[in-house]
Length: 443
Image (cartoon, one colour):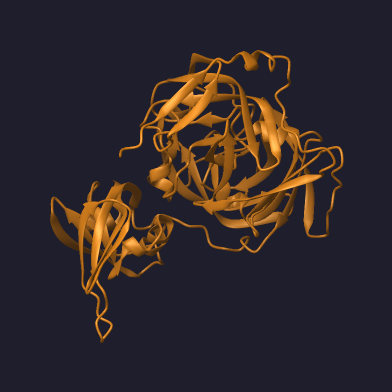
C-alpha cells in the first residue's frame, strides 16, 4: 500500500494555554546537559528531532533562525498547530517561496524539550535535500537551540552536548582558543583573515554556518578578488534554488593562530543573495568542511566560541575533480546469483524498490537506491568522456555501487589525481562504459 502524507493542521483548544509560554528549550530539573549523537554526512550534522510525536531527521544549522520543515512525503502524518500562510526568502536562483507558519508545537531532542516552538513548513516537493545526502532529511533547526544552551560540538566523536548556560563551566587547554563571537539577527559571526593571493592578509567577518557543507565562501569586493585559477561550479542548493559560483583555493585561512593553508574556497554569484537586504557587514561564511576540523563550543549568551583543532585539521580539502554530481532517484532491483564454489557471483539489474528476496537455490533479489548523475560540470573529465545528466550509475571501477553509500560512491569517483576511473552507466536501457583520468583542477 502506498504511504500517503497527511498533515494534520490542528487548531486545538489546548494550544491557547500555550500562548503565554516563552519559546525556549529546557532540560529536566537538575540535569546539567543532554548528549545527542549525530551522523556526519557531506560535512553536515544530521540529528534526530521529534515534532509533535513524529520522529524526524534535521540538519543542525547555525545559520537558520526558526526550524524549517520540508520533505514530508515519507511521513504518514505529522500534526502542526495554528497554521498561517507566509512567504519566505532563501538562497538560490529562484523567487521567494510560499510556506506555512505553525506555532505552539512540541519539539524535543531526547530530554531537551520546547513546548511552544514556531516552525516554518515548505510544501514545495522540489525542495528536498535527501537525494543529494543519501539519507532522509526532513528539515533544518538552529538558532533556538544555540540561544538556549551552550552547545558543545565534538566532530571527533560525532556527539553534541547541550549544556545549561547557568551551570556550564569553561574547560580550556593550551590547545584551545576562546574567541569573541558576534550574534546579529540570530546568526553568529567570527573574525578571521585570509590571503587570497600574494602576501596581503585581509581581515574578514565570516558567518559560522554548520548548515553549509562547503569550506569557505567569500564575497568578491575590492579587497577580495577572485584568483586567476578557478572553475565555474555548482556550490549547493538553497531554499530558493541552486547556487553557483567560482570554485578556487586561497593561500591561507587564519582563525586566531590556526592556519589552514591552500584552503578550499568559493566566490558565490551575488545574484544568489538578492533576497538578503543586509549582510551584517560579513565577507562570507565558514561551512562544515572547515568547522569539522575543530571541536567547537558555542556560547551565544556570552558571545564566545571555543575552538580546538581535532584529527580532521590536517586532512586535505575535497574537490569534485571528476565533475560528476550524484543523487538518489528512486529505487531498482538487483538480482545476484549466490556465489558458486569458486566464489563467482553473476548479477543483473532492473529498476524497482528496497527489499531483499532470496530465491532458494541460486538467486538473491535486493531492492536498492538508484543513483543518477544530477549534474556534469562543463569541461570536466567526466564531461569530456561523454557522461551526461540523467545517466544511472551501475558500477565504478568494476565495483557495483549498490553495495555502497552515496558519499562512498562520490569518494570513489574523486579518489586522487591521475587515477583512471571507469564508470558503467545505464542510458535509455543501454549499458555504456566510460573512462577518464582525474586531473588536478588548478594546475
